[in-house]
Image 1 (cartoon, one colour):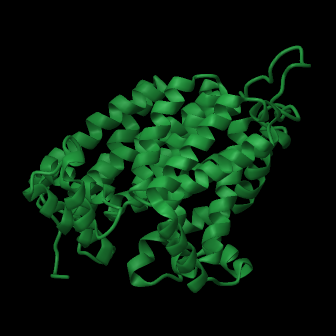
Image 2 (cartoon, one colour):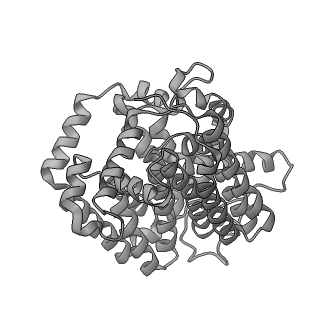
Length: 402
């Protein structure tokens, strides 16, 4: 990689304004708070400008980042964009070297908006963090019975979460897109559980397509988690529409992947298989704060907070599970399935692959901290969720968390 330097401030004005305006709109839609709608986007845009104008020197970049940028430029030169990609699928597969072409296309569109600079896709990734936070907040309200006030708190916590800010600001990586897709998937489940099937199907098809052609195994794991969640949910087991959704979705993913693709993936896993007990702790805990390599030392401070909140994360998993809704079951099962998968795959146990789960991690930390806070008598009584989401024998549905 050639030597790189910070960018002139004038070059960053366009993408910074895009982050600011988009952030204001998305935050207002999610929170209806004037203060948050001004503060959160301004903070994110400021961090973006300061980093790329004063500190960017290529230290916190990786080979994949520059490859995405280079191939995105190639697609841009060929006139490929999200509006016409269906007519260029052979070129997309060839450029990406396989099925995972979505983030190359993402880089092409970023270059079309802001020019062929490293900060271009990063600016779009920062906007995606607002999208992810909005969908997680919506899922928490619809599927976990969060009050509006708590959902707003979750939104702000995710947007400002140090690990998310670090990854989405310094690196041109596809993990922000996967993290956003994960948040949307949780929202899809919450909408299906609420009986909004049309919205769930439309969003589910779109996010499934994006995730499959970005990181193919994520929609497979989501469908597996959804099926298990339905088996553990009395209302889910009785819903033929939900089972149809799982069956058609699974058949679609496996049909595109093919038997050969699935076999190759399993062989790759077996070749790099490691002790899952060791891998479990390595995946969840690395890197050790202030014990990182130069390329990862931007995670030192975020990891301090992550480690400090680990007890609340563990307790939050339990508290979400206790909500006993289909959304709660799916969220916990998907998180555990992904942790188990990466625990067995040595090559993917770095913090970069944990970042895609930040939306779920922040949810667990947030609810775990809140529950402890309340049980200490500092926030009212702790919530008492029902044993299941079957309300047929109850006088009223469970009250929302305040």
